[in-house]
Each structure stands twice: as structure tokens, then as C-alpha cells.
Length: 171
Image (cartoon, rainbow, N blue to C red; front, side, top):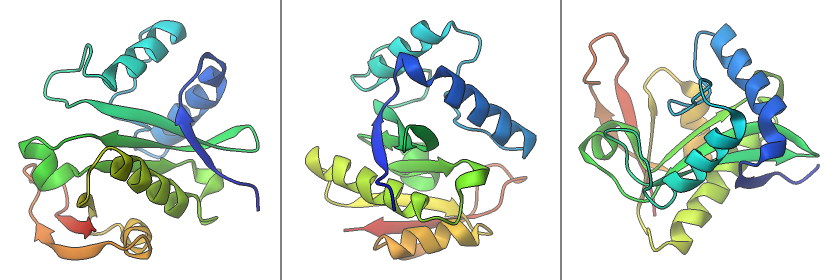
């Protein structure tokens, strides 16, 4: 099996990321809450890189890394790794968010994205990692549990139209 590499987004990633955004939109979801298709690609990449250091953060966001997951030169997924938690993230969002493109699911990519994301947080001194998922997202719950996540509990979402969230800790 080819090795998955979790890395910073580059100027060469425009076609893959644009395709991934379209795939998630077609499913009724989103590639990332932070995607800015209204910006020229070089400006977007520079913006995303700045977020790692807390530069030009969207309102109500913390410093974080937006990384792509690549296998054999193709982007198969992404990770959002938050260096710290605000009130929302501490309750519903967690340290790590991840997504895998539809054609690349059920191949172990999400598990590897989560594993590498935890390693990145550990390198920054984060010892207890919070990861959450929708209560009805069985695939994500399996990924988190396979990654060492221990279920703390289930909390209601602040949006009544959203499902409750499972909260897991990886130590």
C-alpha cells in the first residue's frame, strides 16, 4: 500500500482541492469550513499558511493547520489541526477535523490522517487530544476508536437541526 503523507497545501494542489470541494458539495457536505473559493488560489494558499501562526484568522477561529492528505501524488483527504481549543471546539469541535474524498473511503486513509494529526499535536506539546464526530457517523466513530479514542460522552449540538456529538479523548 502506498504511504499517505499529510502536508501543507501548495500551489500545485489547486485542481485536486477544487475537485474535492465539488465532490463534497455534491454529497451535501463540505470539504472544509474554511475553504475560500472566492480568492485566487495563490492568495488562498498564503492565507491558509498564515492561519498556522494565527495570522488573518476568520472570526471565532483559533490558530490551526489546514493540511492535505496525499497518496501517490493525489489528494485523498484533508485535516484541520487546531493548536488550542476555544469554547466551541472544547465542546463540539475538538482538536482535529478530517475528511476523505468519496472515491478514497474505506481504504484506511481516515485512520492514517487521524494518526498523523495526533503526532503533529504531540510534537506541539498537546498530550490530551479531543476528537468529536456526529453521533450518527458510525464510520468516523470507528476511525476515532481505532486511533485510541476513548468515548467521554455524547453532548447535544448547539444547533437543534444538527445531531448530538460524540466526544473522544486520545491520550
